[in-house]
Length: 251
Image (cartoon, rainbow, N blue to C red; front, side):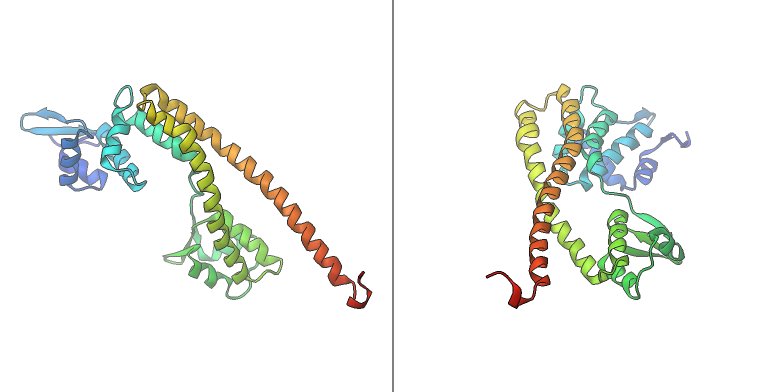
């Protein structure tokens, strides 16, 4: 029987999944992939098997070991890739970074909406925030950050200073992210693991992660507003001192 768009041999399955046949066989032997339908001496696989392989690859890219992937897949009530995939996506989707934007190089200034000074685009390339994809096209890796930085450059802040602040923001927000992840791990995930990863607990974990994003965002914004006000108050106090000649300042 020849392969169709929905049914293929192990060679076709491996090609569609971007894997080697050896890797597919290894997943079969580990029980991560259900066996195909045997017809004569040939096993045939479907898009369900392909979805399972895509799930496995996605989890591996996120740092999951094959043993952990086996637990995640098989702890669901149906043992199906689709249910495990919903749990995986539900846990990660709220925190997925903004997708890169690709465009023709000449479209970039219009997309930004501001005019960058000479050399600013080169600095963006050097920083890795913009990549050249060939044929006169650019890929903006973090659109929100680039857009905000461009606005700062437009009001007169040097591009190098903006890039330095952007790198510092990544370092400092990483520490904040670790605080929230630790809170989730200690008070939500660890109890779920201690309970033996109950099959009916996956949905609760996913819901908790989804609810954590607005909580974290609101808390971070509220804290930033407070500390920004305090910092601005200190700056204004310094500004007040700068406006008064030294010989007229109160002693």
